[in-house]
Amino acid sequence: MSGNGNGGGNGNGSTRIAVPTHNERLTAHLGHCGEFMLFDVDREARSVKRVVRETPPPHEPGVLPQWLASQGAQVVIAGGMGQRAQQLFERHGVEVHLGVAEAPAMSIVKAFLDGRLETGANACDH
Image (tube, rainbow, N blue to C red; front, side):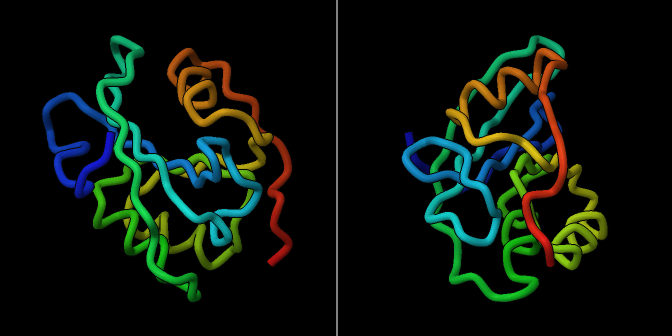
């Protein structure tokens, strides 16, 4: 599926989760991914309602948090990201989960919905 990113997390009981990916697998660093998979989920039902794939704008400091917030992302799951990106996500009210191991994005989102997402150390050192 693909789309324009609109419609996620718009008050209809849906939450939009952003995962930086390559070949539908989580990539280690938020700023170095070629694509984001945006999952519209029902947290109560623990179900994925829709998946949208989006190509991010070119990586520059501060761009991705603003762009993902404009795409309706309310949660970001990543291996790592810089401190500035974390602060910008916080300003936009986006929940961040870091230190997640590379795996298929769909299984990561399902683990998140089931309350069993494993996080660890931030895979980024800046």
